[in-house]
Image 1 (cartoon, rainbow, N blue to C red):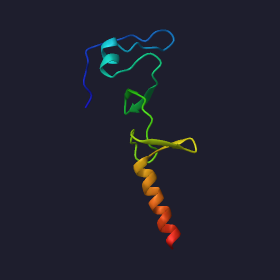
Image 2: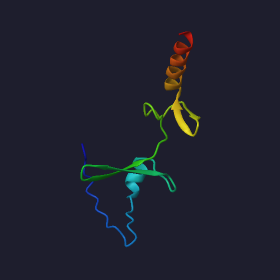
Image 3: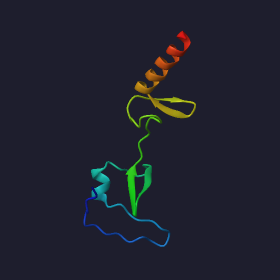
Length: 88
């Protein structure tokens, strides 16, 4: 559900919009933080970027493998699959 903040900002000539300090503080967004941009129907959604597992989307216990992030739970499931295949 989308909740209105009552805050309105104008886009500048370069297409930039300032995110109000109150919202940046609420979502712990600081200068240089990456922001993801999504489209949901006719809405534009901004979200602070958090690296996540390519399989389940988890943001905890991540490992990098071939430039991709995989969480420990998914890595364990993959390992279990590999073990089952080797037993055949």
